Length: 218
Image (cartoon, rainbow, N blue to C red; front, side):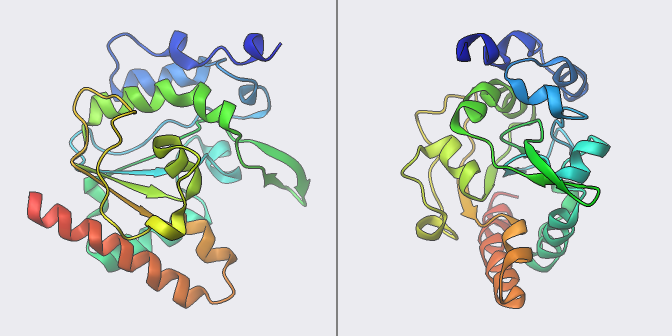
């Protein structure tokens, strides 16, 4: 039954993808069961010439309703951190590993986030491959553990890797691999932290590593 419910996204990915065609095609995706309870498929947003791709986990409640990535509270944290780190938002392409919102129950009017499983990440993988083929970023910033394990496997740990410069994993094939990868925490972790100021400062410090790399490649 799992194979029937999760055939993977490849059949819905355009043969010659563009940002516009990907945003349209993801609305039809039935690569896993998450589409059934979501409002929109949420493809990445940003310029095709963006030098850095920001890779998160999945859309949240507001992202699902609006069909845009990083427009909720975590997106506001990310915007502020990028500005402090010296990364031009216009030089970023923001996307998620999983394109549909997974949730369980509600709190008031807000649906409660439920993290995607490995099978959902695997099913959605072809969308990320297509985005990388179109955007071809110089570097990738991984926002959180799900983004990290999607590229490096289950042994990846944010705490051990954040702020470090990693090579693109050879196991994740793409036509033009990014030159570098910098992991950090997901901006939503700042909102959950007991000391938000310290958590935000740590996020900014990691993003400054990416900013320095962008300066060197610019």
